[in-house]
Amino acid sequence: MEKSQQNISIQRWVALVAVILFLLKLAAFYLTQSVAVLTDALESTVNVIAGLIGLYSLHVAAKPRDEDHPYGHGKAEFLSAAVEGALVLMAGLIIIYEAIVDFIHPHALQKLDQGMWIIGFTALVNYIVGAICIRKGKSNKSAQLEAGGKHLQTDTYSTLGIIVGLVLIWYTKLMWLDGVVSLLFASFILFTGYQILRTSIAGIMDEADVQLLDDMVSYLNKHRRENWIDLHNLRVIKYGGGLHVDCHLTLPWYLNVLEAHVEIDALTALIKSRFGESMEFFVHSDACLDFSCRICTKENCTVRKHAFEQRVEWTFHNLVPNQRHVSPWIAPPAGRPEQLQPR
Image (tube, rainbow, N blue to C red; front, side):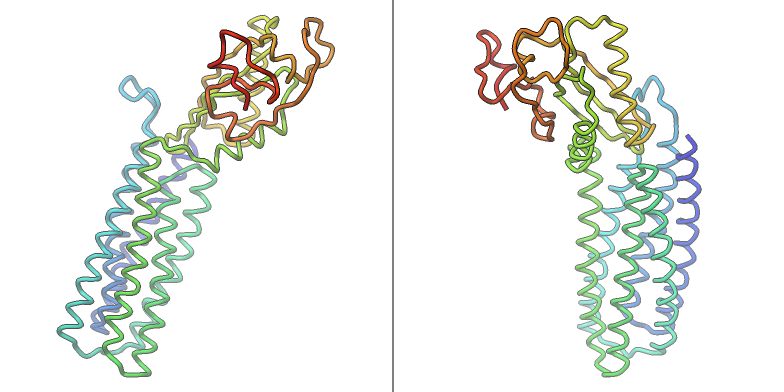
């Protein structure tokens, strides 16, 4: 809950800063009458709306789970990020429209030097706020903060590009460059909007986070206990800043319920130590079978029926499927082919 409140506090500042910077960019447009500056101002309207939506979504995501939402309200962050991505795409399209109109009906530009100083200041502020959001979003596992931070830093890069364009216009006096600069950065904004939208939809649809799974599998492989004979059917679902982890853990068949529970607790504690406390687990324990002896590294096992042959290294590709592992050269026992295909 402490991290949730921290996310909300940061988002309040993001929304306030977005309003102030938007007003500054409007002032810069009033001074210069540049479509390129208007491009920056229009993107800032998205920052304002996205900041307010993000603040509301973090309030919702911080609510505890209830009967209607047994996994909590964390998905609200992905919805907010999706809205932000859609708004960024919309801003890009509006900018393209304004640039085309400016090509058809060009007009003189004014006070470019003053306008450049104003939007240069907004670029610096956006970059600093964006960096804070990304850092806190990653540490607090907040999709909303991270998406918002990336958007703010993208705004910084586009603003710097617009400043470069204005400098060229100022020195060359080629007013048509204003529309060209707008079109170039509208394309950049459209690409950014697509990336934000794509990431948020992946979260809503519970798309597998391959990088997260790779990191988790690698960490588990390095810290395996001897009773962890096999691990399979590993799934990780994101709920805002929280994770829900499912897996099947194969243990020696002769462990009693209490002993098996100790091993499961050790597994969950290991994952929490590396990937954060805001996690929920569902770990199903499987009893080892005869064929498991060949990949079991447990020493001094009094019931071993086969000699150890090969340790199976856990990887993303062999932990995610619902399939127990066997040594590559061992034929699966008759009657159980669906479980025992070699990997």
